[in-house]
Length: 93
Image (cartoon, rainbow, N blue to C red):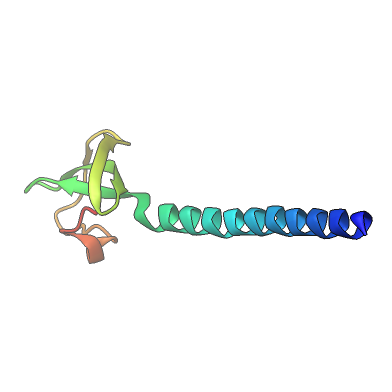
């Protein structure tokens, strides 16, 4: 009788531990997915009226700028040059 009670208690404890472990894995996966979607970076050319441009790396977290770093020196382009990334011309994050 005592052996059956101990076995049942051990099984309940093991089920609880396994349940906690699986729940933690699911929660961790959700956090990682959220971070990937909300924390990102990309490059953008910032140009003046003479088409002198500086490529910068823009770092975003949760839709807000957390950093802007130059990744090139100033480059002078032809008068008809357009940044091929124009789809995000006015967007930063």
